[in-house]
Image 1 (tube, rainbow, N blue to C red):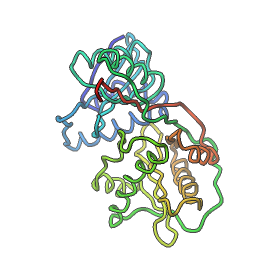
Image 2 (cartoon, one colour):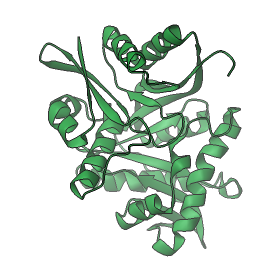
Image 3 (cartoon, rainbow, N blue to C red):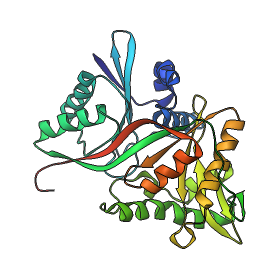
Length: 298
């Protein structure tokens, strides 16, 4: 089992494109991030130098059997791991430990993410804590819900500040609802106004408007024919009126009508959202987890 760490996203995509394309829904997070960063690099943006930033390729002979990445800009800069053989997952943990690279967070597909986290904990004398159980869904046949009052419309640049606030509230509310520690390694909390404006200008962020914004739904850039929906957020005072179901259904319809497949992640601790998406026609693909590796004294 050979492991290679690659800093150039375009080089990474050239090496693993066929592997990602074979199951683009499962690879949506890695493919989306690498595609976006390859575009930024082509426009002259430099890779970060103040934190770990790489993509990993696991090979068995000539065949790519797994990929991972460490590109998260937020603490503790968790890895994201796709399915890979257990020897590859343990080998990646060993390689990072030998490099002196501290690994405190591992997200991704089970069991590979758990194997990597457990091996890291063994090497450091630490322990593994589950932060969140997540589930990846793909849209099958869309079943539109009853339409609530209002319409889906694009977020405007003047509304980017409101959208940013809702991005940040999305994870805070989810943590509170599930009884988790606040801000326990969530990527969207690191978003700033420029990140939101990129989505707005790319027409990938919408409000449901019922006499004013009452709900936010977004989506990511397409990668290998797949578009991931998210975030999906309704402020507490507007919940229970069908806005989220209607917005996700309409965004999903637009994705499919554009020739792409639609997928999304859910928090398994939120049965309401899981039932909502399944009622719309989303079907389970794989269970994942966000894990923390904690050393003694933390």
